[in-house]
Image 1: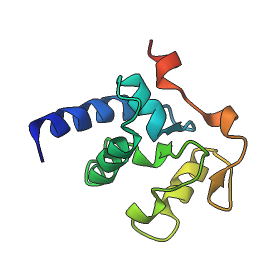
Image 2 (image 1 turned 180 degrees about the vertical axis):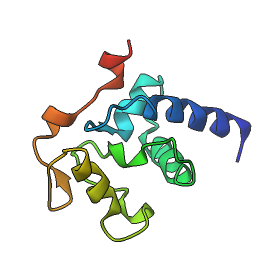
Image 3 (image 1 turned 90 degrees about the vertical axis):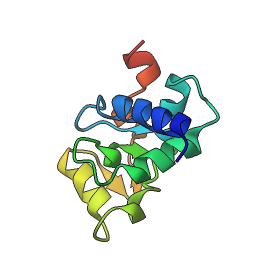
Length: 111
């Protein structure tokens, strides 16, 4: 991995660590906050690479429609959903119900 990717990934992790329990954000929202609005996919790669790090709540990062697109990177068939539901997030058919209720926008919350 290139050093600039490592730095970007660490910046992603710094934001992800701030997502409150029971809230979610999107790959794109993190990318936008970091000044790299077109790098949502790279944020996804960072989340995928974080699964060995216990302090990164990767389960709280979803796609812009609230779909649990990262679910296949978690152990077990429904671990991502179970973790979110354990925090009070309502999910139906692998999508967060009433996303705006749970959405945490780092651009608004951290600026």
